[in-house]
Length: 358
Image (cartoon, rainbow, N blue to C red; front, side, top):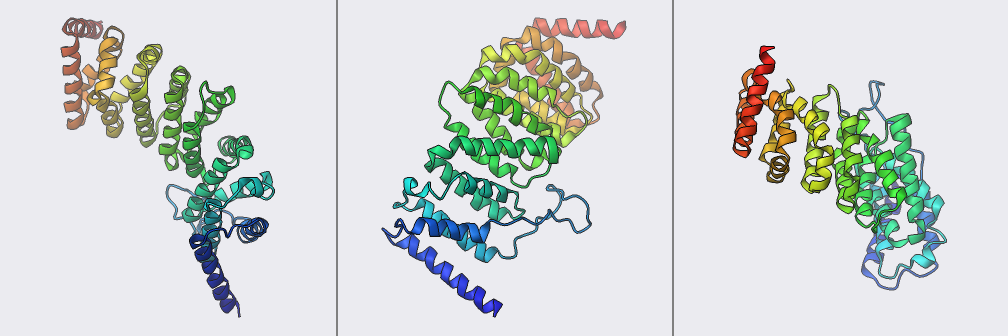
């Protein structure tokens, strides 16, 4: 009986999806409460605890997610609701009685689902709701904030961080200028501390995108962001350092020269450490900065400050680094420095040798 019932339900859902997709004027007032109830009854549920057969903690970087067994049904309910929201007849004014804060909160709870297919639908649905219901926007942002706070400071576990950051990326994109104080606080208090969580690699590209969006909107945030990144810089974890170097290059690509000057000294002290890293990938990633024309022009304009910071690390490792590829990249970096300012280069060389003699 159970299988038969499931089949009937599936066929019914399929038919509804087809109907709402191919017909006009079907979203009448009576449909709104029904659509929201159907969505809520089928989808709002307590998610099972994160699974790991060995009983160890679920590791999003290593473990396979548990896929939702009832997905064929859930998918059709999601499909229907999305078509409903995207229907040309959809009226937010009528819908707002039913799609309210309580609904949004239950929707956000589902972002912790282990099934990436479910999170993908949720991302699109929340994005549509954010776009259509102006009255819910501040609430959505506040609740996403709360999820991040709990993730950073309490649980360090949540499956939907990448998807939530992706939604935020397009929200930040639409922020009006000048930026509100609450948005700047979000950058400093939430986006920056997200860099220190163990599972950073799961959501780092989306996080870096959000940070760069902020800096493109308001360059005066550059200094606090770079200072924050340097504060959270990983001490020993080399794959994480490579992520930080990727993000830093994305930031330098959009940095204003006047902002660069404020942070260049601590920034290049960190880069000098990276270039000297025994981890091949870290040293290599840092040395790739010398292939970036814009970064080279920033260095060139401030050579008198930057060369003395970088030179000892480059010169020492040109002799001592264990890896041949790194030798080549360091040689290239030193050559560029020499072409940039021969006299300064010679002074640095003399200074370095004099220090060695002491």
